Length: 325
Image (cartoon, rainbow, N blue to C red; front, side, top):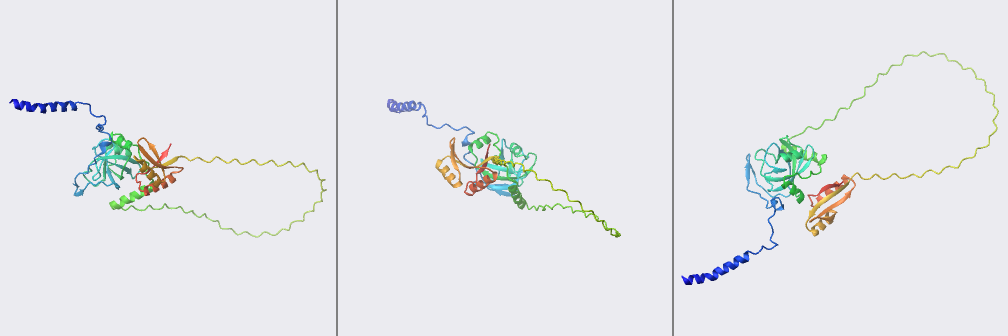
């Protein structure tokens, strides 16, 4: 028994020393767990298994360029904040939802699977439906497009606050999206008939009555007037020198009503930002921890839209127009 105790003494001593070493303060560079609402809350994204709704099988896929038109369910009570349910997009992910009747566009966070009935492409929470202006419309025609927003906007949605609304979609694009939705649904809209143009009513023309000819009367010769004496010429008045014409003052050029910029993207690497600025025709500016790339300013929205098309053609699908106040 004595031998066993002696043999255990070195092991006990080592255990005590190890415990003492573990009691020291943890290194300062050990990362602290992020808050539940931090950027880590968006990762990892979950897809999940395939499932069936009304006889149709849906398989979740991480589709980066998802862009679809359809109808949104707005009468449900599920979800909180400005959130949505989608059948195939990763959880969580972020989408832009556009109301096809008004062009209003908002940013929404996809947090759950659904809708679990019908053929709607998305189900909006009450807060999201209210921000989009479709509350009370159980089947609102919408466009759903996956985007990659800035972290500030992500944080607002994660905390239950609405992100700032996007720029309204122009009517020309809304018409194209509505036609695409009609083709999907097999709907044929009657062409608008031109308004009838009122034809002028011809005025009644009175027929001329017969006029009997009157006898011609010869005019009596007028006496010739006596010639008047010519007045003596008066001395010519001095002619005043012409005044110099006032020089035309050029009117000040009308200033542009607003300045528009095209936000090409935001990058954590300056090299990537410089490459995007060179490719999209803009410049990179450090804002916080991100390098923001934008082009402009442009004097009109039309010029900004042309630059936006150029940026998207270069591969920056999340580029958008911003207006400087």
